[in-house]
Image 1 (cartoon, helix red, strand yellow):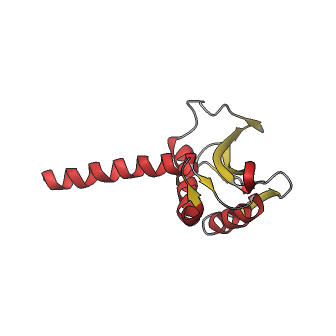
Image 2 (image 1 turned 60 degrees about the horizontal axis):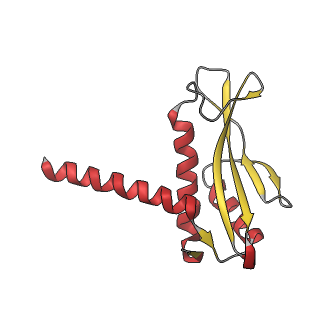
Length: 134
């Protein structure tokens, strides 16, 4: 039993470290190359929504939240940095009645933010060969 808890505990620490890595990584690649990579990753799980190649941002199609009039979309933004490097942010936008809810709204189910974190990790895992630390 103790061994099972250690495995679960280790998995939790690993997941948190990966989220931190995914949200703080910088990549040795152009913004355009990262957009292509991120779109390819996202297409495995979601349908793409709006894409703005000039602003280096895209969304997933809106997803309904069961038994509510609320829906969400994931927003992937590539930020170009000095020297031709880039970083990526993934966030969830949630809407009710056509209006965007505040990200900290208590009515937003936890799974919505978890999906944004999961997607950030998937993009990081795919782009890891290009990642570096400051």
